[in-house]
Image (cartoon, rainbow, N blue to C red; front, side, top):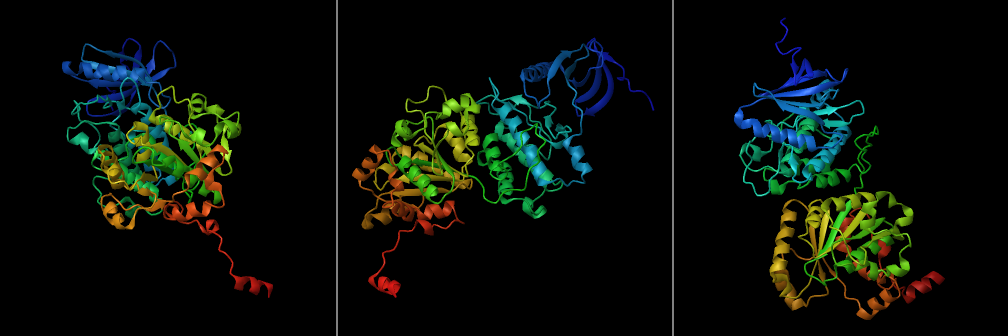
Length: 544
């Protein structure tokens, strides 16, 4: 046995190499002792490159230096030697890699542990993909680049192929990644983006859940390789592994929401808590809007909320903060909202405000209207998911009005359990350019497996109904009944929901029965049926 030439070498005037931690094609990672900070050890990555690669090395170093996430390596120093070797000095993270643990457990890991790891990787990806001034795409997720400490906290290592995303760039300057986990666009020389990282997450999940099979080599669906995987998890992995980026989950937060529907109480990255088994009744996010303005989307959302209240099912109705505020006034908020009620914008500024006294509840419904004075700050996609996480109700109805093209609304739709669209029988309105654009958007969601249900407003004359339905992408599932306007306004001015009226609740529940059965396939709606009038014979029979 000969002592390696590098062992004991002093580099950068202070880092003495002790042992080899790992190596790749053009780089090695060493364990080094700090000569200035006695007892301190670092991971030192050595990279060989030519003159033309100097800028690439410096870009990686500067990118790593800006990162400030507890689960990412912290870069403390970097330099280039006369021998054209670049060195990155980073935290030394002790612990096994995910690949090590996978092999130690004979390639069998509990599903809940795998999902817990996924949650942490999702949070890391969300941090990278929303990094400013430009998103960072990691591009090389694999078990050997994931480390776990004694608390099962994930640390993501090796940013050798990470890059900053440049909008509009046709392709990456370097197509790198690991065969078996990399996204198809990495092999094809195309631009990679956040969805490329989500593909690698799908590859990792497939590998771990299947006992070590690679998704790109195995023609069998994941469910055939391992039994007992929840259907929603199978669907999520399938979506992540779509060849075309537009057909995948679009953001890390979308994946998080899909997994949270199965594991609603997932622990944070530094928690020692273990997952319980998946629940059978999953949370639902239902996006409600209209094909055009003034169609009654908010009224329909309130109606669904109050029917759920009558069924004693906890629910929340959120008004998209970027639309013209209407819900607060519709519910007579000045009279009925608690004095301590906090609007969504206030909650996000200080999440500790989210407790019982700041919530506006009406029976089983939680109202979340926007400030009637409107939003003063920009509402980001991440804000929607933060608010959704704070609400924590089995069913959340999210009223988006007609803002279907807002980025935050698109992200909600991408992870919605269903989308409800109000339409009208007017021949001209459904053929407007804006309406056709929205319909194309709805069809793209349907292709990704997200149900889109249409509700017609008012009855359509029989002689025109067939022709009208033929012009639509799908036949309306049901029709919203017409209620005398005077009755509706009278209820609003009294600060009441006409949907709670015994005279109208059965009418609404009967009319919306088809969509309620889609939402609640296992819930009986008989308790909402209109009471039958007793016949004269039944009275005599009772008297006996």
